[in-house]
Length: 211
Image 1 (tube, rainbow, N blue to C red):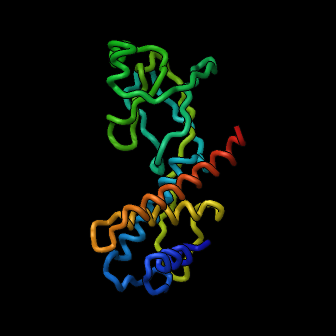
Image 2: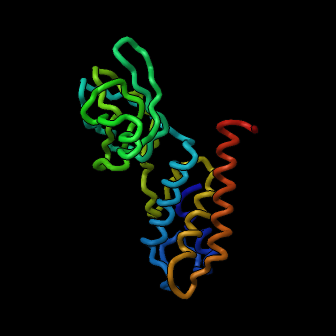
């Protein structure tokens, strides 16, 4: 499906004249608001489902306190520490508070990394917990920032498989129907949330199978 087809579907649902998303005569939403809702839905689908991941390796020196993430990083799917002897240690997400409870002094006492903290760091950076005592390599699987949907003529393909475009549609509708205004409709927005949840479930089945 191309982006203009999706925008037209949104116009039908929201009782706007269908024109590929170019105009919104009701003035309840602007074209920019609708595009923001669609792009936000695409990013959410990527974060929630991990349908598409990229891989990279980041070499780190001993005692490194900052790990710089790729410019197109959106979310982390998996992080593994590979030591010089090729021993690999999976790392889980933690925050500074958890690090302080589990390993007091982890910021100053170096050791084998057991986790990573990215919630209280600068954008596109993270820190290993504890600080690595020796050089090594981070094996990073991550979700990339998807290309922006612009809705410009003649239209471009959405950056997800067509099987998952209903999830984008309903996530975007949920956002739009929660806008404070004369068409605020929490009941329909909640229905859209449930439809989006079906897409997440379908993605989990595709990736992991029935359990």
